[in-house]
Length: 282
Image 1 (spheres, rainbow, N blue to C red):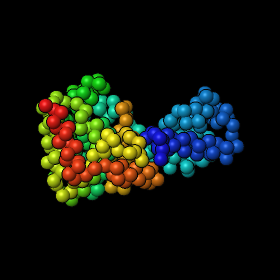
Image 2 (image 1 turned 60 degrees about the horizontal axis):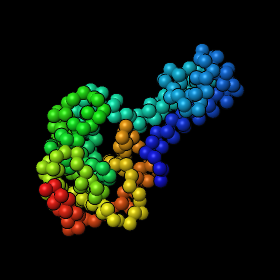
Image 3 (image 1 turned 120 degrees about the vertical axis):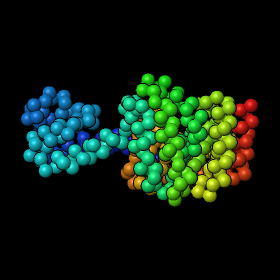
Image 4 (image 1 turned 30 degrees about the horizontal axis):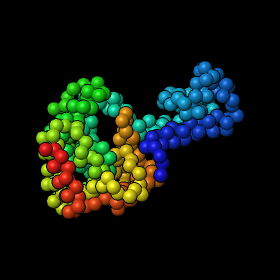
């Protein structure tokens, strides 16, 4: 398994750079000759070829034109756009607040049949209460310095979370036990959140597992990730969301999820873990 959720985006960018450099070599051009034909400084062609600079659509067109390979430009531009969309900074996503992001992802949630979620630091969004979500989104807004639309974003998150109660969706969720103790809201709100977890566990379409502090690890703690059927995995880092669609990478995350499920406790033992955390709320 890759050690970094950024690996897919980086590999995709590197593949574009490699293909462009192959086109240059197939045309029998040196890097300097290509840069001259494109009207660039020689360092620009080198940086693109080494994946140090992401090429724009026009850069790709100029590169292919210079190599008499214009027929390849459209496919390369499409692949480059896909590579760039894999890694999106939170500040970019939240540039006009967080409500829009929740509304934009609603269709993905609605069409997903089987959710598999690993939460290493927070209660998953679709299980958050309004008070918990308010505390969390307030902290994110303050940290990122992005526009304050917390109240609207919380409502949009709750609207998106209706998939837990409506439609034909299955949820398998794994929480590190530490998640039950992290305070992103006040004690009373945290207590309400934990009680909601106990309530939601009774739903036939929800499987909630807790990975104990003391579990013998066969998979180390990872960044939080959301698997949407077998089609996409979203990985959350401090600064960005990484969207993975490569089948091999998706299989790696689903394998990790299966291993984490094996060391998690479910049913009565999971309820006992949540109840212990509830006592700590006072």
